Image 1 (cartoon, rainbow, N blue to C red):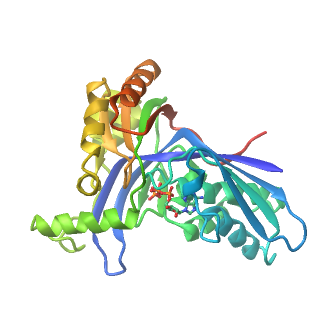
Image 2 (image 1 turned 60 degrees about the vertical axis):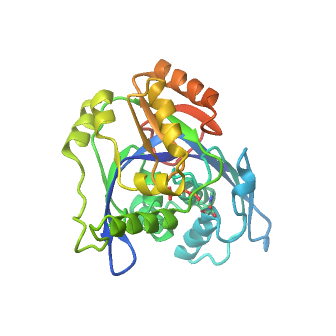
Image 3 (image 1 turned 135 degrees about the vertical axis):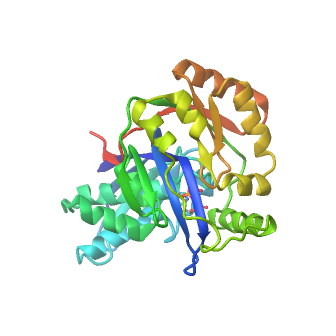
Length: 308
Ligand code: ATP
C-alpha cells in the first residue's frame, strides 16, 4: 500500500490571453503549491477487480467516483504506457482540497495517482515521462507533480520552476458549491466582448509573467507579493458569483496583505504577513458568514510525494 500526499495550488498570477482558434487561451500562470492537500492511497486489488475508487472528507459526495475521476484515469494511463492492460488497483482519495474550487484538486489527485501507482507497481517511470503523462491528463496536472513555484505558459502545460525564498502564509476561504472552469473562461471572453476590447488572440495581448511578482517571490517579500497578486479570471468569477466580493472584503478588513480569487474560483486566497496573522484572518473569515469555512496554510511546498 502506497500513500502519496499532493498539494493544492494557488495562482499568484493568472494572465489570460485571447481565445485561440483551438478553443484554448494562452496563459501566463504563476503557480504556488500550498500545504492544503489531498492524500491518495493505492493498494493492490485481486485479478479482474479493475480500478476501484473511494473518497473520504467533507466534500467527498461532490467527487465523481466513475471513470471520469482523474485518479482513475491516471492509473489507466500509466498502465497503458507500460503495456500492462487494464490495471487492478484500489484507489482511496482523502480529500481536503475544495472540489471545483479553483485549486486544481482533481489535477492533484491525478498527479498523486500517477506517483502512487508507479511506486505500487515498482515501475520506476522516469520523471520526464511522468510529466508527459501528467500533461496528457490535464493542463494543471504537471504542476502538482512539480510543486514549489512555477511559471506555466501555453495553455498552462509548459512549466518552468521559479526561484523562491522562504515561506508565504495563506488563507483559503471555501465557498458553498463550485464554479465550472470552462464557464468562467467563457464569462471572461463575454466580459471582454461587452467591454469592446475583443476576446480573440489577435485582440488581447499575449500575457507575460509580471517582473515585480517574480522579484517578490525570489526575495520572499510578502508585502511586495501581495501588491502584485493578479488574476484575469477574477472579474468573470465575480460576475458569476457576486457574493465573492464580500468574502474578499472580509479577509482584507481582517488584515490580509492581499486577496484574490484562486484560479477560476470560487475559493478566495488571502496572503498574510505571518502564521499568526493568517490564523487571525481565517478566524475572522469563518466568523464573517461570507464563506463556508476558511483554512490557514502555507507554501510553497513540494509536489506529489510518497509518504513514509
Ligand atoms: P482547476 O483549478 O484545475 O480548474 P478546480 O479546482 O476548479 O480545477 P476540481 O476540484 O479539480 O476543480 O474539480 C473540477 C471537476 O473535476 C469536478 O467538478 C469533478 O467533476 C471533476 N473531477 C475529476 N476527478 C476529480 C477528483 N479526483 N477530485 C475532484 N474532482 C474531480
